[in-house]
Image (cartoon, rainbow, N blue to C red):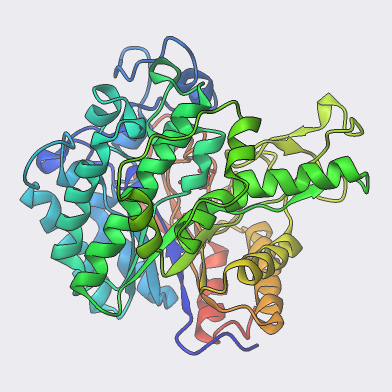
Length: 478
Ligand code: BG6
C-alpha cells in the first residue's frame, strides 16, 4: 500500500445529526430542527402544506437530541483518538453562531463551544476538518427570507464565515463551504432551504440559489486566504457515477448529461472559476431562467476558487432513457434519481454498492480538475444488531469499507492525488434522509432507537478495532 505520508484517516459527522442541544446556550432553530423523523420525512418536506412550523404534537424531531454529542464530545473524541484518527470532519451549526442568521454579531457561547471541541481534537493530534454549512441554515433565513434563492443570504453567510474563520483559522487548516452543494438539483430543501411553498419546484430558484452559494463560497475562500496563507478551503459535493444502462447511444448521452448536471456543474464553477459552456443548454433542459447576477460576481467566482474537492461517495446509479429498465427498476439513492444496475447489490435502504465506482469517480475527478481530492464521506447504513453479550458484529460494514479502501488505493496507483478518507457517521447518528437512528454507519454504537429511547451509552463495534488497524498501518492492513 502506498497512501501518502500524513494521509488524513478519520471520520465524519454533521452538527445537526449528532450534537442535539438544539436550543442550548442561545442556539436558534435550524432547518434540520424542523424536519420530522421517519421514512416519510422527505414526503412531508416536499408537500405543499409544509411551512417549517415545528409541531411537536404531530411529529418527533430526532435532530433536537441527536446523540447528545454537544455534551459528550470529549468521550466521543477520546474514542476517535483510540482508533488513531488523524482527522475529524464535523460541521459548525450556523444557528449556534448566528441564531436567527441576520444578526450583526455572533453568539459567543456558540463560538466557545467550537473552540473547546477544536482544542479537544488538537489535544490528540487530530486535524479538525470543518464544514461551514451542513444542511442546517438558520430556520429564520429559510422561513422569512425564503432560503438561498434570496440574495441577502450571501451577506449573512459572509458575516458568519468571517466570524468562524477569524476565530478558528489559526487552529483549523481544512475547511469546506457547503455540504453536498449539488444536492440542490434534486433535493433543494436540505442545502438551499427551499421548500415547495417558497418555490422549490421552480428550477429557476434552484439555479439562483446555487449562484448565491457560489458567490458566498468565493467570499469565504477570500476571507480564509487573507487570514492564513496555507489554509485549504474545499467545495463539497456528492459524487456518483451514472452508468448508461446499455450501449445505446441515447443512454450514453443521458449518462453524460446526468454527470454534467449532477456531478460536475457545481464543481466546474467552484474549481474552474467559471460557469461551464454547457450552462445555457442545462438551464434549458431544466426549464430554468439564467440566474440574476450582480456586477463583480463572476470576477469573484473566478478569482477565489476552492483549494481541493471534498466529496461523498456511497453508490453509483444507472441511466436509461430508452426504456430497457422499466419503471419498477427505479433505484433509491442519496438525493439523486436513476435506475437500478443489475450488476450491483444494494444496502437495506436500496443504495447500490459499487466500490469500483469509487475508483472511477476518483480518476474522473482528478482528470477533470487536477486538484487534491478528499473523500469526506463513505459508508454503509445498516440495521446493526446488538447481541446479548453487547457486541455488534458488523462484518458487512467491514467488507464494504475494505472494498472501497482497496479501490481507493488502486486510484492512488492510477496517479490520483488523494489526501484523506473520513467515513461517514463514524459514530452512529441521526440519518439525514429518514431521521432514523436505525440506519447506522458507525464504528461506535450509540444506544438510542428511532423513538428516542435509550441510554445514549457508547460501545465499540467489531469494525472499531478493524479500522484502528487500518489507520495504524496506513492502509496496509485492511
Ligand atoms: C450525505 C450527507 O448525503 O449522506 C449526510 O452529507 C448523510 O448528512 C449521509 O447523513 C448519509 O445519508 P443518510 O440519509 O443515510 O443519513
